[in-house]
Amino acid sequence: MQTERERQFLAAEHQVELHSAHLKKELRLGDLVAIQILNIVGLAWIGIAAKLGPSHLMFWLSAMLLFYIPSGIVVAHLSTEMPLEGGIYQWAKLRYGPLVGFLAAMNIWLNCVTLISKIGIQSAGSISYAIGSGGEWLAGSKIAITGLTIVIIFGLTLVSVRGLSLGKWINNIGGMGVVFLFAAVIVVAIPRWFHADVAIAPVSFAFPALSLLNLNLLGKMGMGAFSGCDGVAIFAGECKDRDPGAMLSRSVWIAGPLISGIFILGTASVLTFNKPENVDVMLPIMQVLSLGAPSLKALASLLLVVTLLTGCSLSFSMTARLPMVAGWDHLLPAWYSKLHPRFRTPTGSILVVAAASFLFGMMANLSGGNQEAYQLLDNASGMFFALPYMIMFSIPLLAPGEKPSLRVRVAGVSGFMMALLYVLLSVIPVIDVSSSLGFTLKMIGVVLGFQIAGVAYFVTRRRKLLAQSSQ
Image (cartoon, rainbow, N blue to C red):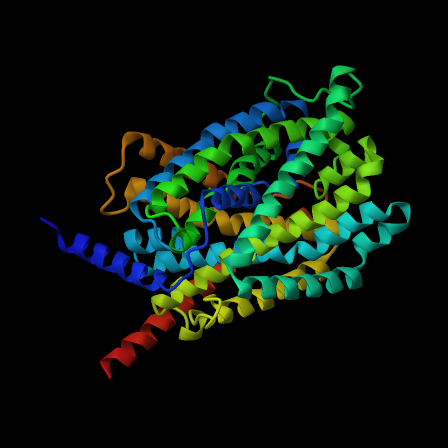
């Protein structure tokens, strides 16, 4: 016999399914695997991991065991139980209530917006590598970065309005581009491995000394590098399979081994050409190819820009879906959820993402040096994502109505602790900045300020809705 809570849960789930019925069903299993690769494999993580030196291997393996595999287990469990458009937002809302769901969605939205906002900085740096000795000015030119940001965000907006009928092909190209770039780096490095012509030993089975910096990097290599397998769940209502939950789970396990191999071999390739202190944490792939295969530099630079653009296109699509589903629950104005009459995409939400991405990009561009601006955006983005991940991992452990297996609960504990480690240590910069204390205060102020603003908005919105319903 169903309890009142179970009846409410099923009724809320049914309402999401009714809204999702109006969306176009565009995604197949291969599309979801490409989304996994494009959403998880950040091009800078092998540079960050290379800061550990040869012992990066043990850290990657630890990150896989403590975070990536647990996140795959929990995402597969929740996707099977609640295969609903919106992913973590729906899981948190149905298990913990609207406020927790809203904060989870807000933080994921902020994460994606900050990722998109970095595209000008990243593209300028990549193009400067392609130009060579005469192009160094481009990477530090605020005018050039601003121009690139405007043009790129405008293009991403048009693609997002067109929808996943076009976007899925862009995602597939991006996923293949990521694999190709890392394959090129590995192929260039392999001859040096065999001839021992390396800057430093590429791998080692020894752990480095325990320190705040190393713990920070472990958190980044777990929560930072391996997060994102939940991204496919945001599009659950746009999957063609009759059982979207099962298809989402399969995509997680198919992409997993490939992603793990890319990170480990890619980091070893960076160390083949560079000592840890010389690694460019922003564009390590271009640094390796510039040293190991100069003739490929221009082609790789072009492909890198394409890959960055396709990744931002995916983030754009994901980000636009979250205000849409929040609008279904009347937590945002109705125009956030209004669909384009032809393409069935949330145009109002898309325009807000475009405006916010540009604003974040300009703030970072004007805040200081290029590397420092990148690091500030990168840390803030990761913290915005870590908070909803902590909510996600806690659902099998604490949420009412959950009856997970022991394996899922153990995975929840491991993933939660790794996400918590990331949050606590992300306020510490891993590169030289003008002021470490200033960097830390900026991080805390930005993240905490958004949480307070989110709660205040939610309370105000709910009061307004209650007042309207009582009239």
